[in-house]
Image (cartoon, rainbow, N blue to C red; front, side, top):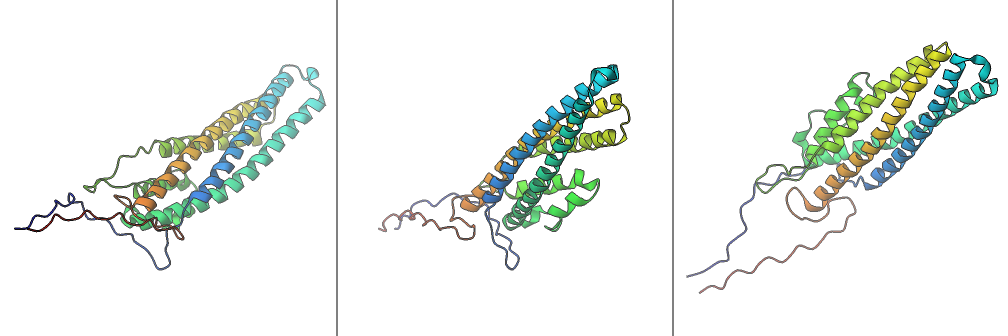
Length: 264
């Protein structure tokens, strides 16, 4: 009679990675670090813009109350600070957007390798949706949710591990709110003809800047969390520990299997 050691509990079949020709998992870590640094810079510049708008709000209120109390040098300084803050914001936004989109496309490609059925549209839309009016307010969020789900590991029974998507949702709500309020602020500045109207535009601008600061902070949390999910998925696989799958990663030797019981 022979006795064998009990085997491991059965697991659901592990999904096989889907790769197009030339597809390879690439670590998003470097791009994530660059993105978070730029988001920090953008948040800092928006805080400077809050100060510039607060100064403009005070000056315009004074002018509206009594123009003789405010010198032309003070109003000129207000214009200079507002213009400088706007220029710095533009440069920071452009740099951050470029690096963020490169990171976003990379995690989208990785997500397709992890779990291709999680996606409903081609990977190019991960970038394309951001440039389509109105659609850019919700479709990138749909893509981000699909990436998040594809990057989440599974339990042994095949059900997804519960990972809160709060960083994604909170960032998106803050970003959409900041975008809408920022657009409204720009329209007010463009159409302002009186000191009172300029003060109102500056007040809305403060709200827009603060929302952008919040969006930048929440974006950092989202980028870091999604990158961590993909790092875990690449290192451990859908269920358990496995050799790292990123290009150029060093494989980890497999653990020895348990010996079988002796045969009688």
